[in-house]
Length: 451
Image 1 (cartoon, helix red, strand yellow):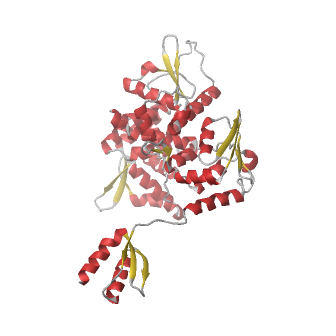
Image 2: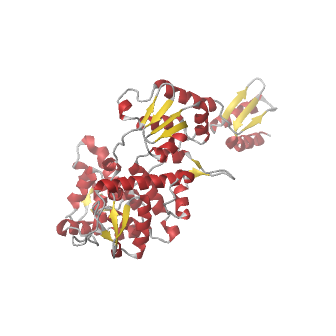
Image 3: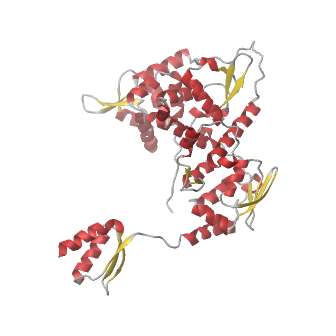
């Protein structure tokens, strides 16, 4: 079964793929410069700060002298990242030696930010306005509930909360790689879709935002402006209210979509409307390693293949239905069983045994997570055995050859097929041959030349 992997790239990967002119425009914003500095590997940060007040170019070989021999691999990673983001501009000096110079636009913006400090284009709610704002705990609960409702609508529209008002066209953009649909059949989760569900919340957020930005031009939105606004939004204070009237028309449309995703909470006052950033929004400019945190597990798997999930989440229930039979659901407990039939159905939908085992281990309840193994061995072994049952026969398109005029021609055809790595089977006594369909044309041309 082919393996599919989702790479949930962050904003910096998107920034690196932008044209040079758009990059220079982005680097005029001090907050974006700070966000990019945050995302860099430690050694790359050091290089940027060392060149921040140097106007001229520095020889590439001098950078290598700044690190110990065992740090050369990290040095290469740092330089590659800086060149990708166009923070370092490569050039050759008069002696034809490679040099690096800090991007002048980025250098100027970061200098100004460090010397004068940065001020957001909008201020938080004045103290003289008496509006009851949600607490940080309430805001975190709201963000997670909103995100879960969005994911539920994404993978299981029939069980989703109808209060979400995400447009159908926008939902199709998000579902494009996560769901597949055949004629007259309900949409099914793909291999990529199941891997998406296995990601932590921050990784899922990156993936969705990447799709949102990648398809921005279809909605008539400039990707550079969208990235700039989102990175700027990540510097707002969690729980503080900001006036929506300070946003442009473009930004107001974006903030409504972000509210559906749980990145901000909209609040209506007596005269003004406000938006309140959640923790999801502030994580936009933070790298995976800094933002990812292990969620507390909720699943207990017993040796008799019974599954107990201590959760009130509809989303958790829908995920479990993908590979187990949910027998009943209490207010805070989901009880099910892993069976051969439910696993066969999961395998038919492109879900692999390793993905299921990984999900059960990653989400093991704290009471069993400390055990070794967290999921009983007989359960994991049986899941893999049931998968191997349906993968015992592999179908390969092929061509069958017989009635060769001579043994020399037969052996030559075998050698030709081997050369192209397409020989599947041969019978030297009867001079029969089977080759892969993709090398059939090469073997056919060889036989025609023998006539």
